[in-house]
Length: 319
Image (cartoon, rainbow, N blue to C red; front, side, top):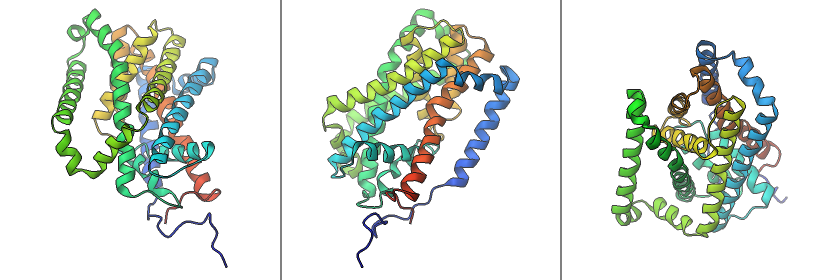
């Protein structure tokens, strides 16, 4: 009797979805979001109701575009490692990885390649693609930070900002500069010492114009979504500045290495919006809406895609 070709292969790794941890994170975050809105802003029900407005739907579609473009980039690098997928299958498998986003530094997303039921990637290859994704995202987010930096210079923000926010922004800038300098200075030694980093660098050499265009367009789409939400809340903010605020918050949250940048991203985005002139309650409501669409929508879609891929399509194995 021939085995079912769709059944999990013997080489599939033993990985379990951290359902309890995910539910715990969701519960804590939902409680904190609701408590913050109750104390400093509108009621949670009022803020969430805006998600169903025309602006909310437009912003959600832009976020879906972000996920799709980054999924195309992932297919490109998977093909580089000999794993070829159809368009819908590749996007579904990529989206399934978003179920692991609420992990420190988003490292759980590296499990995408490991979970494949047939021809799973090795740990080194999975880390390589994950590393390439993070480096590409960082490059494009840093570029999108430039309008926010120009705004801060023109407005003299560092002189007016609270001490904690100034320190956080300066720490983020210093960390990025030091990390970039160290990578450039010691890249040859790092590439020799860490095989997966060498492979990540090799991924970035595959059709660089394609992955750069996909990455920049993806993050720009979410920047436009933030701008739409700000405009809907009555905050006068330029498109490039809004995208820059979001990029700064994302970079700062990533440097915190907390699960999905929780806490750091929200604090930075809220603080920047307040400095722009938004009331604390409005800034907080905007931040909650942005995070629900740019983060938790992805996690929800990821969980659904993961369950479908594992239980129905049998493309993913947790053995």
